[in-house]
Every structure is written in C-alpha cells, then in structure tokens.
Image (cartoon, rainbow, N blue to C red; front, side, top):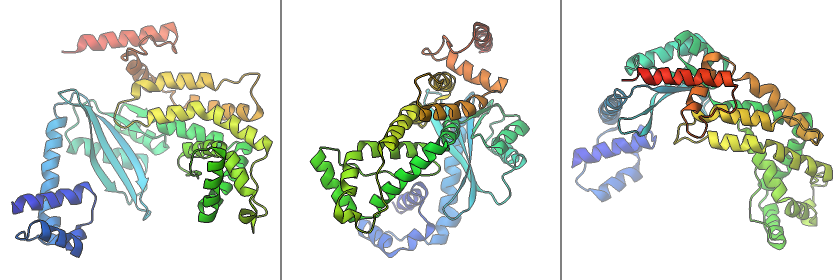
Length: 380
C-alpha cells in the first residue's frame, strides 16, 4: 500500500504541475498522516531522482506503444514564453488510435536558450521524430504563421499546415488596427478599466442593470494577444450601454472623473458596425479553437466563406468597409502554397459535408478527386 500511495503522490505532482517541494509542506504531510498514519512519505530527492523519472519512463513507454500502431501522426509545435520570461518549445502529437479514438500527447516541453531560428527548430523537431520513432508515420507539422516555423518545416521536409486559428487572429488583429476602430477600442477600454478598478462603481452598475432589466454582466477588458477579447469587450459594452451611461451620469461616480465620458451616437454606431463586420471572424475563431476534434477539413471552406463575407458592398459604412478591406488584405495570402492547398482541399473532400468542394473550380475539384482515388487505391 505504501508503494501505491507514493505512486499517487508522484501522479499528483505530475498531473497538477506541483513543485517537488510540496512533499515538504507541513499541510500536505499532515493530510497524508491523517489518511494513513503508518505511511512514511519519502524525501523530496527520492521523488526527483527515482519516482518521477520512473513514472515518466513508464508513461513514455505507454505512449510510444500506442503511437506505434498509428499509420500517420501530426505534430504541433508551439513556442511560448512563461511568466518568468523563459522561452519554451512544446511539441504535441495527434493521431487516430486502433479503436478510432482521437488522441493527443505532449511529447516534450523544452527550455530554449538559443534564438528560435528556423534551423534550430527544424533540428529540435527532427530529434523529437527520431526519439519517439515517428520516422515512418508520414508526420504532418502544424505551426503558427511565424517565419521561423515555416523555415523549420521546409528544412525538415515536413508537410506543413499553418494553424487557422492563428491565421484568423493575424487577420483580425490587422482589422483592429484600423484607425477609427483603434480609437474606439481605446475609449471602450478606458471605461471598462474604470469599472474594473472600483467596487463602488460596480455597485452602481449593478443597481442600474437591475433598474433597466439588463443582465448582471461585468464589463470585459481585452487582452492584447487575443483579438476576440476586443470583440467581446465591445459586444459586452453595447449590451450594457444603457446601464453604463446611467452609471456614469451619477454624481457619486463622476466625482473626480469629469473627463470620463461614455460613447456618443457616432461611436455607438461604429461599435455596432464593428461587431457586425467581425462576427464571422469571431464565429470562425470559436469553431477553430475546438481542442477535442480535428478541424483541418474546415479550413478551406471556412476560409472561402470568410472571403465571401468580407467582400465589400455598396451599403457598407466606412467602418465596415475599412474592416473588410483590412481582412481581405491579409487573409488571402496565408494559404497559397500548392502542397498546403492540396492537403486542405483533400481533407475537405473526405468530409461528407464539403465533398462537393464548391469553393474550387471544376478543374481543381477533379484534380483533388483524382488524388483521393489514387490514395484510396493504394491502401492495403
């Protein structure tokens, strides 16, 4: 039983990302003592040198045994920076198991002290493929649109697809930089931040929401790295605009805040136009952010639909026109490679909902169908 408890403590540390020092914490030791008085908790060094490495090796063996049955494996590569400004590179594998379950495993998260050059990333990915015995798995690489990732795919000779959620973020961020919209976001952000910083002001907001029959929703402030948070911020502002306006007119709230004003009619009209124009991008972002299901078959049809939605019309307001123009300047240039387009179109052709490939020309459709037929004929 002692061994089972030790293994459970190791699993707790690993699964919940707890520091090894947790085994030295008085509260944790007291908990174990209460649950099993006879259990003697091993030292921190025992976990770092023996238990956790054994758990890692055992888990790695299980993952490799599962992946070795897969015909093909896709890997995603993500460079990120921790709160402590340390750089990391995470590689995750995705595949279909023998019993048709979609599985994902983080293969490694490695600290990167060198520059994230394409050559360095390519070398790291090659080592991962070799270490996890994926060389015969027709590995497909999915990354963001960063130039170093594109270079890494080319150097490593990996079939490559760029993350569509990241592509949508780049195009939408370009739209958010439209001068009129950028100024509008600044005003909305300032008001939302003012409400966030004062419990008194929030109390008045709740009272006004109740009086006006509005939902008791807090205002939202955006996050620079997530474009859709700016969309959510403006959408929530419009929802709560009557309550916000009433709150800001309260003498108690305006005390010392004489320069804080709500939006005028033109601002509100622009905000409504911005939300309307960006709604397709928001819906696509939400759909493509699904983590539990493959989404590659959606990229081509959604991309085509978005470009159609973003086509300008005579009735577009200046705000809508500027947003559409920004997006159509950015979005079409992201999936131009012939190899990448073939992957996306083939994936869509294999989905019953999109197999007609209405977004392609007749010649392009026939070429994709021909490739699918040849691939099917070559299967065992």
